[in-house]
Length: 279
Ligand code: SF4
Image (tube, rainbow, N blue to C red; front, top):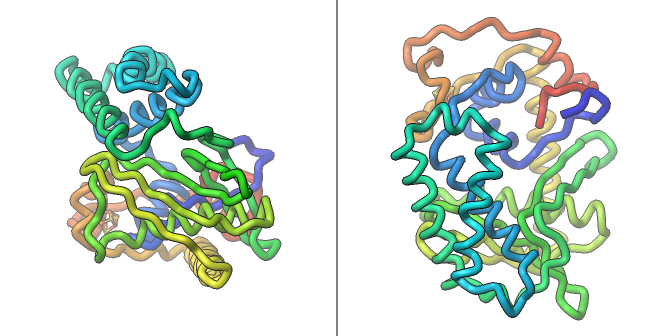
């Protein structure tokens, strides 16, 4: 993020704080490096293919056309992120590409892209809720019907979570809906999650009241983040998700020792100053 852009909270970082404030600190305030994960790289590749698919004339958006987009998208990813070729052996890279092809193939079981005419793809929106709570998000796809109804679509390369674990994805979609309401003055009529991992679609039609509640939650979260940054206390919160946390070796909950935090980075968060602290 450029130094001239105000700090803004994204749904991913908000979910980090909800999961574990210490994770948020290490990832977002201290900005410690993390090794790329094969799943994240695969997700980036699939998203790139599905975005490019809508550059193809609608009548030609076939499974074969999508498959032909995988290789150039992969080459473009390797060009933009050379660390991927360094981090992963050739067999792992081949596996990433092979799995991406299967996920793109499965996409066609869930939607018919020849019938879709997205108004926007990979669109970044920013808003400032209540004047003091900057947020931002990147929406995979925005569909607008003839009557003006807006549908927000997000692709997930994993499987649909069981109900007790679906809160973070639902919150992410409400977060996007908040952005659209703030920027466009319209409540999206549909929020659609497309789970390519197991071929499921989850949809929700939010009301203004739902978004008011989501806004209150985001503002309360921002307040908690600022309080933590001001006090310097980002508590650790163990859960089954710790198994996927790349900071586990340095986490006190697992016998590790934390590095010192940069007080200037934390100050940027609670003062809301321009800087790279929250992205
Ligand atoms: S290992 Fe668990 S408790 Fe420790 S920072 Fe990561 S998510 Fe938090």
